[in-house]
Image (tube, rainbow, N blue to C red; front, side):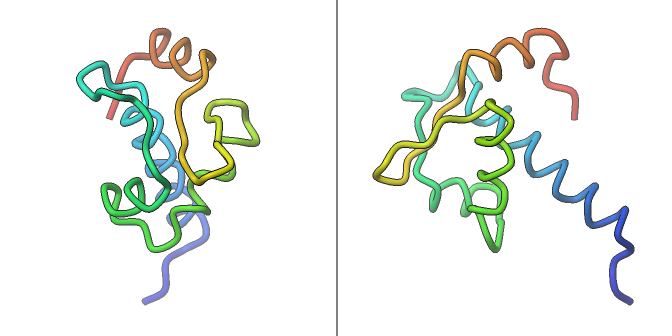
Length: 85
């Protein structure tokens, strides 16, 4: 049975949230990841589809060579809401 549209959007929301938590985890050093590594960690078929909305929202910065890292806004968001899963 195909996923309902709201189930699919919920799935993407969860993946985006997990990515922000991964990038802002203080136990991760350095807190910079390649997009390919993010895809493997989150088991995402298309990691660019997870990264792109977060870059557009200002929560993630992307380097020219394919690495991503959290912006100060992402750290503030996590500080405000905590890592709620």
